[in-house]
Length: 282
Image 1 (cartoon, one colour):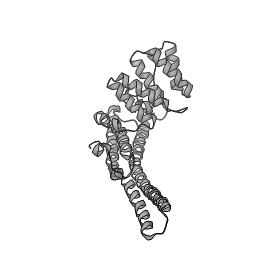
Image 2 (tube, helix red, strand yellow; image 1 turned 60 degrees about the vertical axis):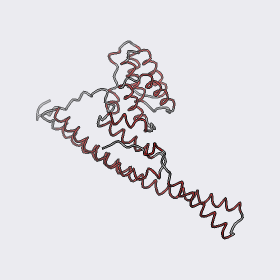
Image 3 (tube, one colour; image 1 turned 90 degrees about the horizontal axis):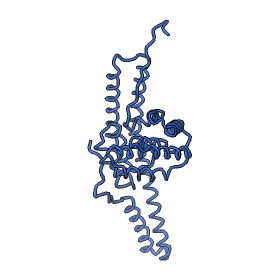
Image 4 (cartoon, one colour; image 1 turned 180 degrees about the horizontal axis):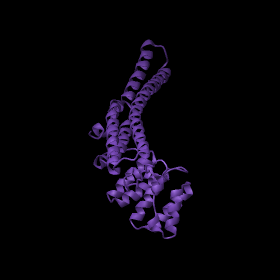
């Protein structure tokens, strides 16, 4: 599937605005021709026509866009539910090969993510009618391609994305790190963390501190974690701050963030399958 791109360099004609203006013009012209209102009221009622038209069309379109977005989310939730059921089964009855089980999970994940990408095509017809929808679609698809580890497509979509949540921002930050764009990564981290409220952005602080550790900038990493501890309560952040403060750099680990951390693909989790116990075995 080809990544979503905006036509005409993003200068999409907003049909809703044009229709609303047309409606306002019709209302105003009708009042003029019928001499039903004075010139001042013609302008007022024309503006009311524009506002009512914009509001009505917006309400209808929001419902349709939400339904299309929900369809994508339902595909993902259904796929994740089936994957979790399979994992739960393996925990009770371990598979013969852990590597084969992992391959099977990755194959299943690819199937439902590709289905979600296909379903996202339903949103495209609303782009000319909905402000910023093209960027929302790009962000959605970037996140899905990231899960598929198709990073060339991820990188192509990043300039069109909106980073309204810490996880999507962390994905861009991780890509900047992998591509060796240190200055851009530093600037992007500072920009994203400025807008965070208390308790938000754990993954961003954890990721950036990890990046600094990889760059051997231990003191800078410690300062980032100290700042993070002032903005949130998180055991992984606190533990890593203490490790760096006491020169235990090798014990630095974001594993405590679990899936949120491993979703970035910078480290692989150490998976331990539960051993099957036989009656009388402890």
